[in-house]
Amino acid sequence: MVLNLIFLGPPGAGKGTVAQAVMSEYTLVQISTGDLVRAEIASGSKLGAELAEVINKGQLVEDNLIGQMFENYLKEKISSPSFNGFILDGFPRTIPQADMLKNILSKLGQKLNAVIYIESSKESVVTRLSSRWTCEKCKKVYNTVSLKPKVEGVCDIDGAKLIQRDDDKPQTIAKRYDVFLEKTLPLINYYENEKILFKYDGNVPPKPSIEEAKKIIKSLVLD
Ligand code: AMP
Image (cartoon, rainbow, N blue to C red; front, side):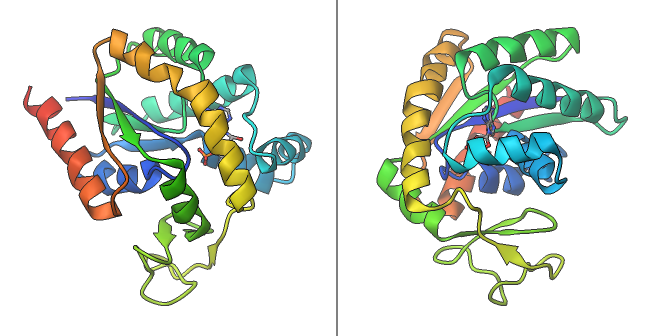
């Protein structure tokens, strides 16, 4: 069964961490538009320099541009013979992007199974993101309070260096949360109307959050 999911929630709700924990169990691919943006920035391109300016202010990248980056990447993943479904982490983030996603999926003959909303307060995401570290190579996410690597500053999986994101500074985090409330929260209603919305309280440590998400996914698979 192909399983296509969206994880929705403010920055720091744990979308990436939960996605990484469930994707191997169901052989899903995680698609993070934030990672696509950061890869473009790392490439040193002119577009990358423009994107860096936008993301370091905590603002959103323009809908059509992010939609195009997403579509190209999704097409590549779907064309793989081992494709078994995806988890979208960070896309869509606005109503126009949700409309774009609908069109893209219908062109590619795919459907969405569920949108999982990980509810998290501003307070808990500010605390969480200021202690977040990411592997510069495999992108695994650690937390210096709740999900420590075995060796400080080093990824457990590949031994690469852990780095802190430029946009994980307290003022930028607060701004990103406000942008979430304004631009992304309306998607809850959007997907509630489509009767595919599930939600749980994400103001908890990673382990119980992962368990909640797994319960929802299991119920979809058994349906
Ligand atoms: P994330 O890693 O998902 O928090 O994304 C980091 C930053 O990349 C965001 O704060 C935005 O500036 C940009 N970005 C990622 N995904 C999107 C999207 N779907 N729409 C607009 N901007 C995005």
